[in-house]
Length: 512
Image 1 (cartoon, rainbow, N blue to C red):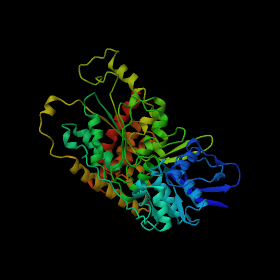
Image 2: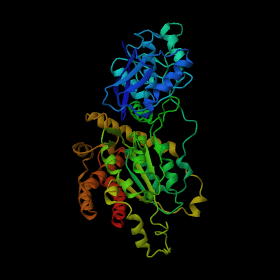
Image 3: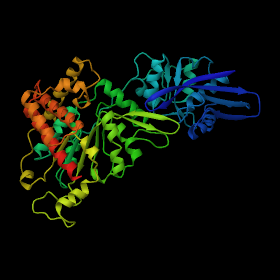
Image 4: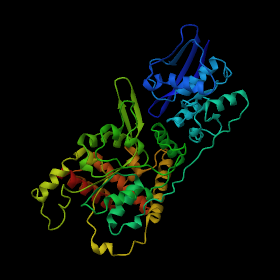
């Protein structure tokens, strides 16, 4: 007789059903796992054997065969331990044969019989709920699984013994409750930064519309400080965004204690990061920094110090909002709708724009051109706002702290985003939340500059030699500026300010 247990395999953030089939047959003692299993799954037989012995169960001296169907689907990870163990326990009569009916099972076993935390429980719970099943998962992952549905049955034991007692009726496992973690450390405040009013304005526009931002300035000008304070003016995740972000975090094993957070991700990889680390990949095609920054901020400090191939790999995710990792035997898609915020010095010395400074490497213009040529034109074309961040003077530092901090700016950003969400909902696009996500006819529908603004835009498009992408990005930024002003129509002054940020980007592209 064959006993079965349902589990899942992960393809990106999607959970694909897997049928665990266990047969205990006469023959020489053996324990074989088949079904295109990787090393971690093949080693499950030793963890299962030790965990059952620690729980007071001995494997029969028979031939045990475990098949993971479909056999042509790659199986990776340690979450197959628990479904294999439970199906085997049902096969030898340790638990009722129908105990696993209607459940999907994920979990890793320790040698002493405890059930250890695994990644991907939230996608597994959502997939189980969609198929009308309950979920059996590790106790530490119970709060994470509870977010899938308030009605589905969830068992989150800490050990095999607890689960066996629950099936026998001698112990009742309480349903876990969903949890939201509240970070105790406050976010850095914009009030800490003295001066840099134009940079703060650009940061506010970028936050309001979800736009990409590049800051260029000498060392110590405050570029990294500004970027670190961007999360403090971003609105919290909406319930739909929270679930979307947590799916990626769950697959990556980034959820601590199964609790979710409504704080937007802020990822700041070092400039030595590889392409696989940034966009995802590796042996098991794990999500990269762009996916871990989904619905949040990806901050790249010292932008030209990244490898050119690594930076150019961002071009597709910026446009499409997703990363497709293709391998010879599988293809994985991860979401990657992020704000790109980058900072860089104008040259290797960092002082090329400082009045009276002469670079030792040659003329200042040549030093800037050599350094900025590390950035490709197509990448710079995808930057919505480019600003020059001047050095802070001693006169700025002795001034009192600004009266306006992150709280006031965050209120304006939240109001602007609310206008955008309401506008998109009225146009039948409720899944869009920011102007940066609009494209095609929808962008023309929401912008529609007045006559003076349209004349300015036509003249600037010729003088700045805007590409089609650059033209549309100017419209998006202008629409965001109008939303911050509470204006229904995109006017000349909104377009003029948006073009000023694009003119800086055009100068950088010419230097590159």
